[in-house]
Amino acid sequence: MTNKTIVTLPGDGIGKTVLDSALRVLDAAGFEANYVEADIGWEFWRSEGDPLPERTLDLIAEHKIALFGAITSKPKDEAFEELAPELKSSGAIYSSPIVGLRQHFGLDICLRPCHSYLGNPLNFIRRGVDGKLEEPAVDVAIFRQNTEGLYGGVEWSGPPKDVHDAFMTHPKFKQNFGGTPVEELSISTRIFTKKATERILRAAFEHARKNGYTSVTVCEKPNVIRETSGMMYKMAQELQKADFSDIELWNTNIDAQMMWLTKNPENYGVIVAGNMFGDIASDGFAGLIGGLGFAASAQYNPDTGVGVFEPTHGSAPKYADYETSIVNPIAMIEAACMMLDFIDEQNIAIKIRKAVANVIEAGEVRTYDMARLPGNADVIQKGAASTEEMTAAIIGKLT
Ligand code: NAI
Ligand code: MG
Image 1 (cartoon, protein in one colour):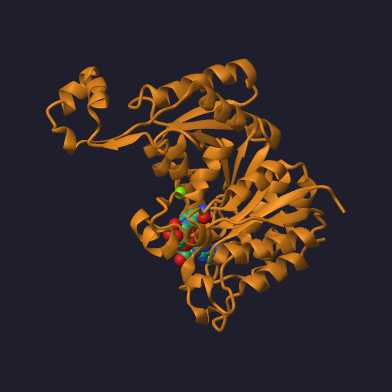
Image 2: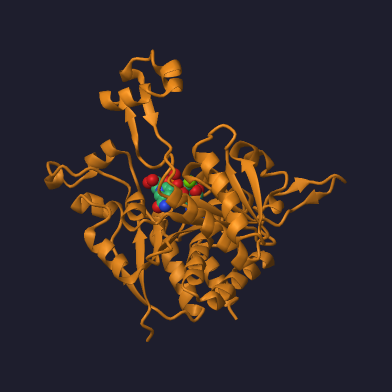
């Protein structure tokens, strides 16, 4: 047996179902590993007051690589309601275990690939100049800074006096907001550091070079958000000049990028952005290639080699208890392939992606989302494939 150990984090709801599918595909494709299952999610919040127990962090720290299904998350008040009665006085406050993982392991690089599979009925289609329908081949890799920016958590409603005083030293704040009573102010900051910006840019350029993409596009808004977006674009220019002159550097504004999304998505290769704009761009591109059943992401720290691989979708509680699961396992299987890329098992990843491509192109086995059916228990009778049938079909195409 191999000495490679993968931590599995099934989580909640359909997270368990799709992870199970991915593990079966990995196994059938000849990937050898030991798996150790770790606790994460709602169940552990309710029973222990912690959705990301210390023992889970220890396991990931030890083995570095984790495959994550999905979790259920709820607003703070609702979370408190569901906490085990004996824990209600413990002071436990719910916080997202996903954000917790990012912060604990400094998973500052987030990669979300969006490539269309030939024959996927959910692919984006547009009308060409001659009136004929065109189905552009989308192959974009989005690098999202994962720990800073608007999601950095530095924010206030009714900021304390010293904070307010500091803001008042900025002429624009004084002019535009100085007259607003403090209790009427909500402030969320957008902080970029040079270190993290350099890391995400370098990851994007390196990915482009390694995978044959000819361009890297910085997708921000430097003309308006001059300090943070401006810094990122300027650093990208310097980095490109110094180390990546073989790769073209493009610059788009996030708003314009969303408009161009449906105009020329095939023109883009690697896209790099801060936390919020990266989140937006990746959802936008994911919509062109089939949405939640197809979108996956990798979050990693290049220094420590810790990586967490997951589908973008959540626990879809609505489908969690179906006797026959109907959800699409492809996003989770793609996440497993990204894990294989990360640990230099590309040959197995290629094999799995080829099998997925073959199933999609053949068009005989389609989960309800691919069949464009409303997600209900009757979709199987209507001809949609179950999770199990899709998994078996992919395994059947492995060569
Ligand atoms: P969701 O992604 O769980 O589901 C939204 C809808 O997308 C589903 O109702 C279903 O129609 C579709 N869908 C999702 N995954 C699918 C799949 N594999 N195949 C086919 N269709 C699929 O998002 P929702 O409903 O907003 O959130 C449910 C729970 O998941 C919440 O508690 C939320 O906080 C959590 N969540 C967790 C995430 C994670 O673990 N990374 C990400 C997003 C939400
Ligand atoms: Mg998102």
